[in-house]
Length: 127
Image (tube, rainbow, N blue to C red; front, side, top):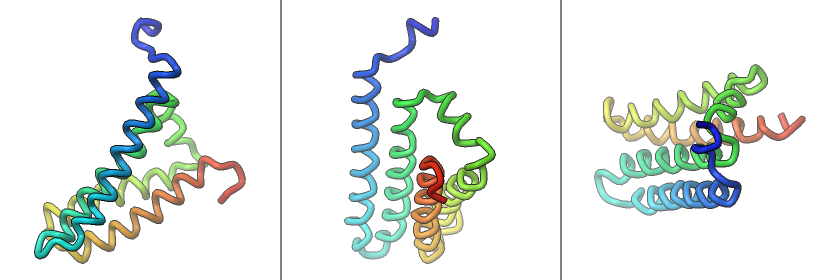
């Protein structure tokens, strides 16, 4: 079963590039939608968050889902992972549930720093 469902290296790289490109496109689109009157900040928060989720999801193609999850929740990056995921969720909650645009923008900023901190945790001795 594992051999029949595993992807080849070329397919993994193509999946990574496609998913990462979609993530970058969503983040860029969110930045462009920031200037739309009334709903711009909410649209920015949603597309920026979806872009970050797609970018994180792109690494699933390179490592595989189980290895990615195991590495995300290793003790050395557990706090970074929790903060990053919490910021992603809180951004969407503030945009849709609480309808607080300023709070959504604050969580987008925190999301940026949390994602940077999480990414740095994969570089040895970077933190």
